[in-house]
Length: 344
Ligand code: ADE
Ligand code: ZN
Image (cartoon, rainbow, N blue to C red):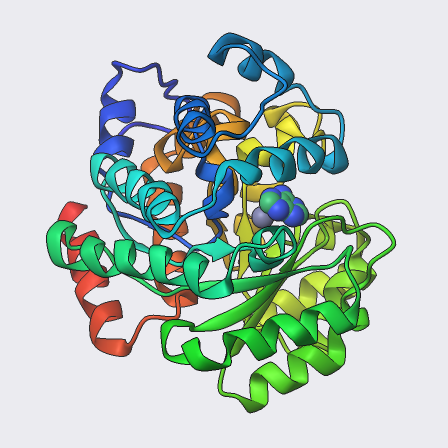
């Protein structure tokens, strides 16, 4: 086992160990896995104009100083997604990447309002995604649970309409989430929609404490009754919240590369994920929007190894936390735990 000072590069023993490490992803926006090449291919296929002439220009545009810079580009790029086949291809490409990186279980998010607001039918979006997830299970052995997110910069009415559109498809959904611009849009804006979603049998999660204050984490927990908090790194500002998170083992789905790209932390050396782990908080590693932030699951683990000397014991604990925090059934959790234990 490498000691805690082992550095990784792409060919180091730790790097290949991290690539093969069985992994679970609980915080991934499918629209954020749209790679520049697919962006261009779909723009041509659907005759959509892009403000970029080539992949290099796209990559150059991915310089962000805050969440909103990223969201503006992310929503614009999502306009190339039009047909059921597009949503299938997007999801399938993500699953192939998971296979390459030994990601065994995923719980992706999608943002229906980004598509329905420009005339794409809800059924087009969810059927394309769901078919790819079904094929992913059958052909790649990757299990999944799908989470529908409401855009928090839009109003409660729009969220209710989206939940209404989801009604015929509830069997394809495990839960609902809350994403987009956090500042100015506290979780409690959606208390009533989330209450309705829970009545329908859906689990709830919410982005909170990414750019927003620790207070938003409290209201995600108390008002939206979330089972997990997405990001949650600003919990560190509130000692009482830290105690609560430790005592309840409320999971945080942390996204290291996202947090540095969006300047939640200036440098990865300043990231607090391993401090939270040391405090016995149930933190997990995730990629958020991998095509925008410089990497998928393995790259996120590698970034922690490089900047924070992540060791194998910590990496295993992070994956164990993801299994515990996942929405899969007990049998699948046991299977995943066995695979992880056999790897050690
Ligand atoms: N939508 C996609 N990625 C997001 C993030 N990191 N925060 C909020 N909304 C998002
Ligand atoms: Zn996110």
